[in-house]
Length: 465
Ligand code: GDU
Image (cartoon, rainbow, N blue to C red; front, top):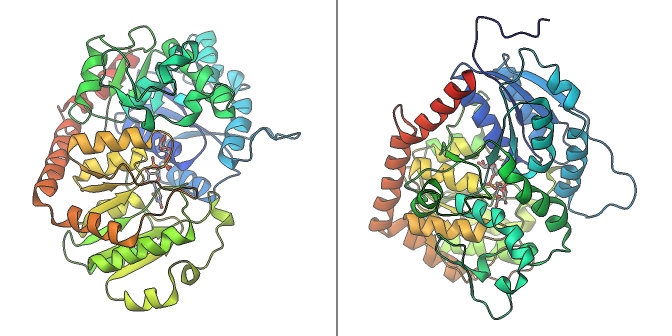
């Protein structure tokens, strides 16, 4: 095979390297599809997943629907002795990052030669030096909010001056941005010895400035203050390369048999269903599941409740009846549907029957709701989610009860409180209108000529040169 760029092209050839987990894989698949429709040549580099069966199935169905994508499948290096953590996703991450360190020969022999490498933020410290050695520009893909990205970029300063997060502080100020409540800052940020901090946060925060740019799944009017501050060089000028907002990312067509829950949605009135899903990894206590079911039932609204009981899908063996109770399923048979495991959220949120979304504020989910203008009840748990929840509230996309916690250790939120929030999100006309406006704006940004569409177009044109 020739190693020179042929005349068909001068279309850029981009290698995309996602990290572990569905929350990182899905935005890459979406960006891959967006690049294909802009005539780019694309190589997708993935590592065989040992964590989630759903990841493997998404990759193979994406590849079979997009046969023009070149695929490189990397065998993750097995970690033998003394695992550093018992988090399966972290272990998968560690093993694939070690395998990606050996990617150089595959990347250098790419044909046609690479115009750019896109990798996830969490791979910045591994991939940016490889790209530099090959003389190929590297772009990082952020799957979190731009505001949280700023917090990551600021982390080296925090580590150097721990007083900034001292016990008496209630807020953290990053010059140029509105302050972060200390309660929204994930605890590993405050602990330099934490395994996540040492192995992922510190090296990657330092590597951000080495990339040519950071592609963010966001749009100016959703995070106006942060994007404006960055674009005008008022914030983190030396720790961040140019930030390129191209969101909300376009969904791609999913060709598969219709699922039973989609058929059920077809039979529900427009905007009548409360959709509840806490993403790919969030589990909650059985007690909390009972209270959530109670809240849904008491609200009187139709609902689609999606539950996961284990971070690793193949280990999720709990029976639905044991989780919500046999009689609950019986009583709500005409009003709701409960599903255990993975659903196609993209399809669900695009269905006209969905009226509201109760969610943990994983950023992908937030952008999916923003794209459709669906009002949210933000119920964040860990990581970036509290920062994201505040953005959701400020953008007018949803409501957030900041006292609520989620996850196995959290204080129980009772059914009556949940009922109140569900009624509020379904009945508050002003909120519904504001959320619709967010959806209208999102479409303006991503339609031809819109700002997000232009940013991507200009990037592709730049890489073509
Ligand atoms: N999804 C489904 N079906 C499901 C559950 C999730 O299709 O049953 C999809 C969602 O549509 C979304 C993705 O999977 O596209 C999940 O991503 P989220 O960001 O919404 O949620 P995660 O919990 O996977 O996200 C994790 C962290 C987030 C954020 C994110 C991106 O929990 O806080 O950092 O990674 O980095």
